[in-house]
Length: 485
Ligand code: ACM
View (cartoon, rainbow, N blue to C red):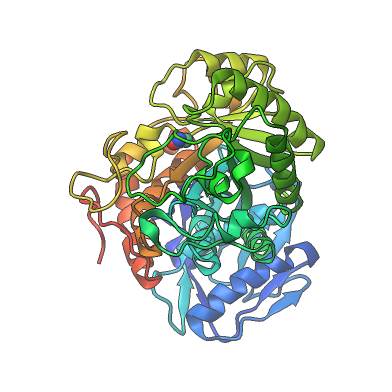
């Protein structure tokens, strides 16, 4: 109970009340709770080898019960967990709350399973601070397989992150099948940084990823980065270029950006964008489409403004809301539903404050705090340092609720840690940059600020090393943490 991450609102350990998972243990759940119960049962089966059936209806003694009760737990993602030597009762008002509680329950089990696996006794009450708790994975610069992205979803969900923002397109690769413009994936997705074979997700595979994420209560936000960051598209269709000439695919190592643009003055560009967004929206149960809009250095400003003016209504017609990197705020007349994602390094930005004053909510991803592609320290073999080195204490030690002038906590929809992948040639590299830092970010986004305490967090985090070892996660052993063995 004293090693939970993210820290819960309250926890009262009761060491005499540990609950043993045995060959007789069952998980009881009523209808809507059954999928979460099955998820918990799978974890317990895999750990212990016991059958752990999921049964309908109320629980007798000796069982684990998942209960939906909106009166008992007012927050939709909140939960109450009670562990005694006789039974475990997890109560939530929604399946999402129960799922969060299951992640807590998992952390109350020892890192290594066995035939008798013991849940630490006591009571936990909990609910999140921010609604949007995200990680971004750049699958453009290097491509990661469906299985790898599913593993990432499982890894972030264990820390109660609930959004996976997929950066699906960039200069170096187009990673999602678009049936009306097939060369985007077959040509634009055929390579990656350093010239590897790249890859793309078919629409079938992408639907499967989105459904898998939903089963982990994670919403996928697809990013189609326009009008810049578009070499993969421009190389696939010459007509999208201002001069009508397709460039070569771009595979150079390094983090060059801002050198490509869709031809904002051509009608075909808007047919292209509408077709792409229509197909992507049809694959997206979530509210948001992310349009990028960052680093449009190769787009004349007038063209950029026209482009945004014409694309915003397309997204609205598709029934979706827009997220864009904070450069989106250079466009006047954004709807209040539009969400700027701040990736700057200042604590003051007049356009952010003005958007908040108009009623927009914002995402915070300040690069020097949460860019997961920054090195931990100068000895980190991969990653960049243009926004500084970011060790665990740096990502932990900032308060999104007070971080920016004119952006009060109520205006902060949430926080996201972007993991750009120019230097991450394997999924092991992804894990190395994401962990342990995503655990720190999870606490910043989930836990009440009143629990914020670096020495306490560092001590709790140390106990997660053996969990990651048991799950074979290639985490970085930051020297800031006295890792447990
Ligand atoms: C960004 O880092 N260009 C959002």
